[in-house]
Every structure is written in C-alpha cells, then in structure tokens.
Length: 47
Image (cartoon, rainbow, N blue to C red; front, side, top):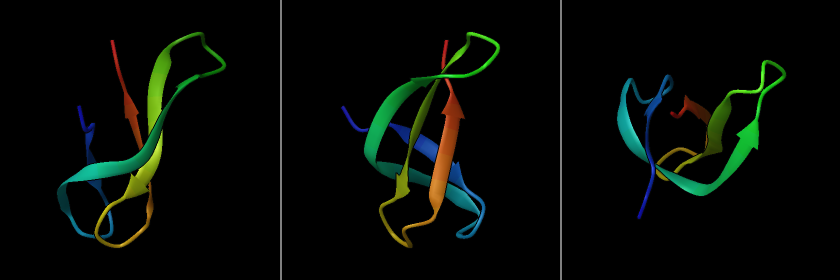
C-alpha cells in the first residue's frame, strides 16, 4: 500500500516514494519519504 502525504512544493496530496516508518524524539511514529512527482522530502505523522 502506498502512503499518501502532503507535498508543500506541489501544494497537494501525493504518493510517497521510498516511505519508511521512523520514530520521532517524542516517541511518536511517522512516515518519511519523497514525493513521487518532484522528489521533495515528505513527512507524515501516523497513529
């Protein structure tokens, strides 16, 4: 399943390429990847 996030460069919701689950300093989980269209870094907090 492809993860969907908001790209600030494209200004719309896009699919994340190479998405990886990471843990932030406050112990919350997030998805980190790149925009499939422009390649800008994307970050999405998940439950």
